[in-house]
Length: 515
Image (tube, one colour):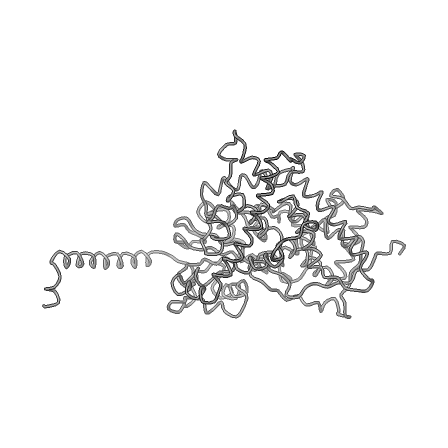
């Protein structure tokens, strides 16, 4: 009795009432959970949930293995987070089309929040009116006809530079195609986004390649994203938080220096011809106009966030696709002979291949499609998040559930692609015109779908096709060291962007037009 005498009666009454409310809420929640039909859920452990089933292997492989046992839709508990894993075309269609209005948001995590200046960008920001505004600006100003014209012009120049560098390379010496392709896409991105010829204006401080690698590495999930209390301590002790701050600070300083340069040019009326204006210049100019509408006027922070999106989403993914395409082509002499024959017949004996030539190369387009099927740039699409309760595949999906679509597994599903789903066979697309990337089909989803479809869904494949066409028009290619074609190492590496584990080294052999 003594213990109760030291508390006022009103406090005891309040505690009793709160305790009763807690018991009632707990009972109600349990009843609600029983009434819900949740997706299959592999056995989990206390605190960590299903994390132990993902360790020691790439996440897309771990998810695929679990899906073989628990089905194409399953629910995992990873720390404090509910994660819906989608591994089939039918389920992807429900997420990206049928329930897209509910499942189109993005989860919040530490890295993307800091990298995007607290979510003022277009790629990672949760669904909102602000996201709609940013996407509208990005599509109209970066993906519009003027920018496409400039991009194609720069790509043509860079491919010519690449071909000259290959021609000057010592005969019978291998070339690192990863570096070759990175230089092309980096040059195009820098020129279109910043108006910068990076060869003439080298980056001060950390190299751009190192900075980009560090950014992409940090975009992988951290402990703090799934275990808010203990995870944050681990991220702090491991040095991850410090590294994140340093990388974001370096990237911001680099972008800010170009914002300042462009501001200076605008202030001093040093304006390029309208067709040659880069993306950054256009946004700053629009935002500075007195009669600019709220939809056109962006803050400097919002503008910088869009530049971050271009660097993190448009360079590494395109390079990876080019490298995988050349890897698969050289592994298959039959495919190489067939695609080279088409390219050389379409282009004839020209000094330059242009877009009109490439548009006629139907087999080359099949080769690129098959590359994207087997090697989607992101094995797992950028995660979605549910805005409210909905149903997918007849199962209940709770609010704030992270939705992860395994594009790698969908592209290799034998129920869709047949027994040879794991083989590189471009001819499978001869009678599959309905398989395209812009939302009409979900048998392969390298660019996502729905409201969150990658804006480069049209331009990225065209860039790959044009570059590969030039590589195969002028040169034959072989693997160095006497390695047989079929023995080329195809090990994968990476989680956000799926690369070859080893760089692709090939020996160029100038094509003999007299043969």
